[in-house]
Image (cartoon, rainbow, N blue to C red; front, top):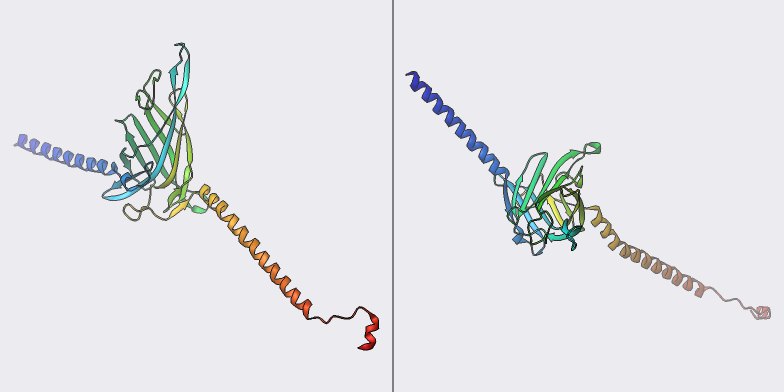
Amino acid sequence: MGRLGFSTTESTRLLLLSVFGVLVLSVVLAEQEGENLSGLSTNPDKAIFAVRENGTTCLMVEFAVRFLVPYDVLALNGIDLITEQAPFTLPRGAEIEGKCGSTESEIHITWKNNAYTLRIYFSTEFRDKGTEVWKISKVQFVYDTSETSHFINAYNPGKHTASTHRLSALVTPAGHSYVCAAQQTLTLISSDHQKGVTISMYDIQIQPFDIASDFIFSEPYKCITDQRERLEETLPLILGFILGLIIVITLTIYHFHLKLTAVQPQLPRDRSMYKNM
């Protein structure tokens, strides 16, 4: 009987562990459910990625990304090293994973059989007067210089990781999506002899928190660069309108002045004519 009791206890324990394992696995899967929606964009350079949790969109990224990665090649003399630059873009067919939270979220974008991985980390914080904002707090880029489509004749090829340091980018009020057509550039420091990797993003719309409707961004918050460019576009129109208004007012005043001058009696300049009046 004691042996049977032990077996039953062990079975119950194994059952509980199995249930717990299933729950943990389901949570992990929910955290990493990503969708590639790039086919919805008419711009061939723009990618659209979404992270979903429990069937609901919790993070969306829409942007075009360019990379400029320095790497070493052997000089013709076979002794010296020359630094080349590998330019390439983020492909629309990348694979997506992600994780959503109330204060921290992240998205991992991988392509070329894991030769490249772009990781973007988001976080929230409170600024002056209790204003809540979200921002990009870290960007990490893993690349493999043995991948020959971009890195040609790389010296000592292998995987390297480039990361930002104390980043606070794309700061946006909570509940809004960040929108910016202008280019936003980040410089990451690589594990490959501290080389500087440049990541340029443009045609951006990003929202890592508080998405109210599935696959739909919240109210946009335009970047300062776009606001300045819009002001530069509209300022000549405003100045032209003001100048035109000034001209109209001046001509109107001059017209009335001529009318008033025309009705005044003309007095004779020859004083002898006064005798006949």
